[in-house]
Image (cartoon, rainbow, N blue to C red; front, side, top):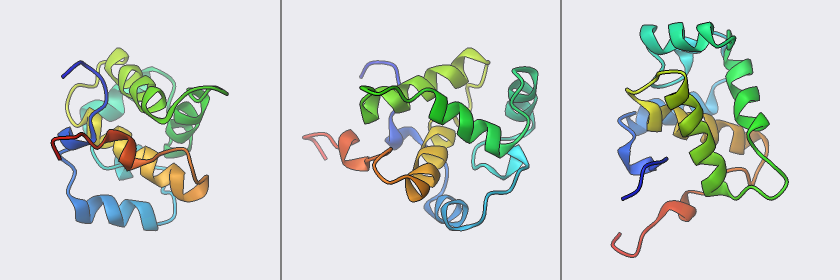
Length: 117
């Protein structure tokens, strides 16, 4: 498979993801599933200081004609670009699913289903 976002590579538990999605947004970046101390440091170094700003970065990457897959890939590559390697797919999945509850249509898990599944 080519490089980019793959929700099947998320190591965030379903319970943790569900908890994050239904809770109010906690401004602390550590509240995002997959964001540990090192990832938080890397985001802070890039000027992303809160969960709100990380959500804002995700929204900033959505163009008028950007597909769901391209949007998720753009976030995945953004995280890679700031040096986040661990839990990158989980972070993208958590933010995408959370934002989709606020703005329906920004993420569709069916976009990532394969014929083999």
